[in-house]
Length: 115
Length: 115
Length: 115
Length: 115
Figure 1: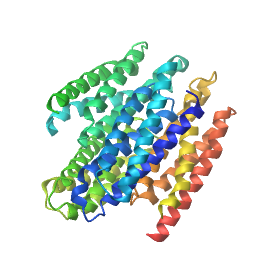
Figure 2: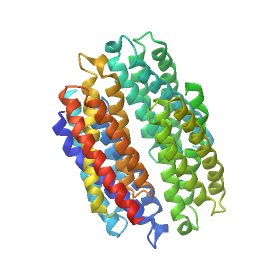
Figure 3: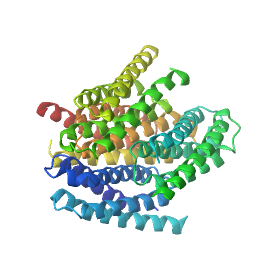
Figure 4: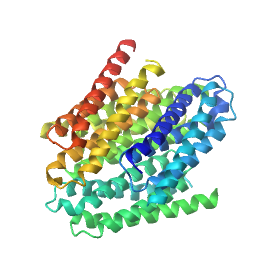
């Protein structure tokens, strides 16, 4: 894994963290807040692991493969939960989470091959 | 998992993060700094995942089992690397890392049973 | 500041982060969720800066004084917001946040004197 | 502050975190490691506050102004320390840290005006 190869994954995770945190604060302002409880919790879980994974890549963590595998799982779970809601900010989460999960798995597999 | 059951694991991780970060800054002052390169890197990896896992437990993350499994692996790797060095701060890491790894696995297994 | 002098502040911040994150997840389950929007947001802000400040102390950050000053302000704001609500988990936040703010200011002033 | 206005600052902080963490791992491999002790420590301090500030912006933290003010100070201190070393990775830190500090101050002032 070279510095450049990480960039794509870092970009995907930034977009995902941004969309999740935006959906988190937006959900807290919604009228149907009560229906969004689980989504709010997942948004934060997803943003937190994305933030952790981004730093891990920038510091060339020897545990990048394991961290990104976990990140991918949480992104997918957040996408599943977001897909139950019609709000634009929820819908925006779905694509960014799926893209992030895919990017994580791509880097994770590449790291394991080279390790 | 109840609030009280997490406390033991949180305490073990705080001690581990503290010992690893103390060893990190102490290593940077050592005369044989060059021999400690890998240990410095692992100390930070371990402190960072401990910090993340502690927050995850306090917010009752639905991913606690997975996060603690990863944390346990990194703690063990940090203990392995620290055990190659005679400095007191490295030796202190070994026990706190092993205890942390054990505490993580105990909670992780309990969470999976109840899930 | 010695290792031992930090311990009291670290303990106060752990309790604060734990109470805030517990109040955060508990609020998301409450019937009067809509009244707790701001409190939920502040709980997370407070937990996040506490987590950051704890790590900063354990790694002997040269910026501990500034980080703890900021942490104290956020803890106080979280206590103010929590004090508007009768739930036990909100009430528990008030004391732990005030204690944390005080502990932060005590260390912060001591660090500046010795710097 | 709108979502779009934050983007420039987030981009500057990502670049800064990436350069600092790259310099951190690169420094640990250098022959003149002993001269880089302080720089290694500052690289991590800078990367850690950048990571925290990025998340704070994405979640529209009510404390963005204060967090970015602190982040700007740490970025400047990291740039100062990096400027004492000739390595490419140290030199790369200078510009990205200065840009990040400037971006932080720009957003921080704008937030305070609108608050």
